[in-house]
Length: 313
Image (tube, rainbow, N blue to C red; front, side, top):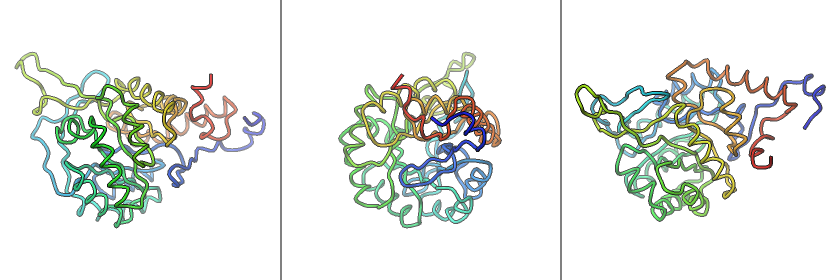
């Protein structure tokens, strides 16, 4: 640790390096929130995100489910969008505009089999993305969650195949809807992935007591927001103790202190999603301000130095 009097003479260093990418701060726009167009991705960079992630995109376009697809619940949002997207070939056309934000662009992809993942990854890689995030864990689309995210063998085959197909860093977004997320993380690491994101949304539902039916048209959705932060935090903490590749924390991050908690648990960077719905884009600057104050108060010069410290206390 640097001396307090030295730190007070300088600006705390929020920059981090992960997967060979330099981020001005550890705050990353999560997939699925404001990531459908290059102009929005650029805007998120301009308002303070250290990196941005696109909405999950597959090899072909998909309409998603019919409404209602989103419902607000206590301390969170429940969604069952069904992965609507224009298809990877169309989505990569947004990259030129997104890159004007001058932060790393992470391209999120999904597929219903190994070939689809590889096809989408190849198109995205050739288009010049900075990293690829594999969505193997959407809890409300059967083909993505049950058949892939919960099957260690299939996860391994997908990761190995994508790594053989592209030369970009590959991040795997893990599902909390498994009996042992650590074992899946270890499989991902052993299969060659460069990092993991923990976690995706938690499988959940809501019922309308007046009409006596599930609120969402698809019945089951994915819960995000503050309600799942303790789950995400626990997952990051446990994964950090067993794997060596970087972890990107995700789930319920709405305040600067949430970012610190995730990093102390072992996350090298943290994704922000639902908080942008509940507040506004100024949240990035609010979080950076809070983090800087914390660093000054605790005599911390570099944010990267706190990663995993909760394991040493």
